[in-house]
Image (cartoon, rainbow, N blue to C red):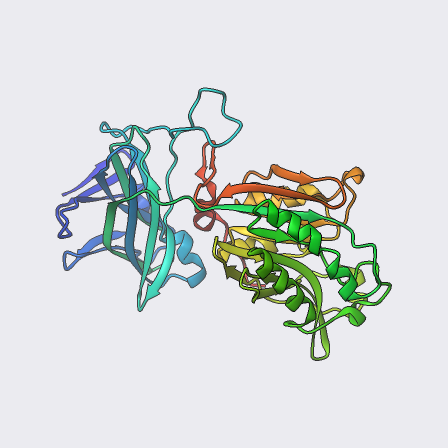
Length: 437
């Protein structure tokens, strides 16, 4: 039976899956409702006709136990949807409700703007896209039901579709699981100008006691400044450039292994006839995990003959996913956004100097931790050596030369914003399309 209720179209389909889930169809307005149907009793389909912009969703209400953890998963297949628009056209939302299907609150405030004693409303969850196997992509997420929740409203969406486009959903599951272990990591940044010494080798060796100090404080990731083998040598970028892997990665790799930690260092790389400003990531086994070539170059580096990089790699470590950017990159939101899109949970930022508000913005707009190490004196009220949190606030700052900013974070814990909830999960579903240049 198909019913019109105000501006909501509702269509009930019973027991489409073996699990016995009952699904209904909804649309914000009757005139933009797509065609909906069940294919062979196991696939839920939403399809546009010759018109664009149609929107609707399959909806189910599933019982949950308050305070317990749940693993959501579903399979999604699209036809006629541009690859870059799938993230917006075919999202999943999960909304926590009471038995009477009213909204609930979070168990504790996680954003400082809430008044003492108040709790934020539990905003929708947005499962993320996982692996693709053939035509089907897994959409998944792990969540804790709020202490007053009894129902999870699951919405499988088709939004703003192109003419004759289609989204199919299948294998929807919401399974109770054990609580995940916290993913705590200690992030550190060293505030230091290597004034002594004349050679690249001299410069990198000056950081050894500071790395040891950070390691004594149990740092899992230690970020050093930009082009540290060049600072104060009086040589050119090209004269300080070296291969990667090379002498500096070997040196810092030995330090990382000695102290069983991760180190990010800014150096200059020569690759054939080209020279790059790079950050390198060394692991606790002493090996080079990866490198990032600075994508945005200021005029001095352009005039000095450097070449920009063209990719945004993110590296898996023992504690989480790490991306890197360098100095001038911070002036451009595209760099941190691409790193975040590629999965970065922490962005290491060797930076000669920059507006510290831009560091806060890069952290806040992507809900990632940004760890900056600068040559700027704290007295100058400009760039800082420190750790920015998901809300852009400085969690720790080193102000004296030779000191260390360090803080512990839990990568498994999202930050919930007023009226937005877990904003990081919503970024891919809500950010605007990027026009082709």
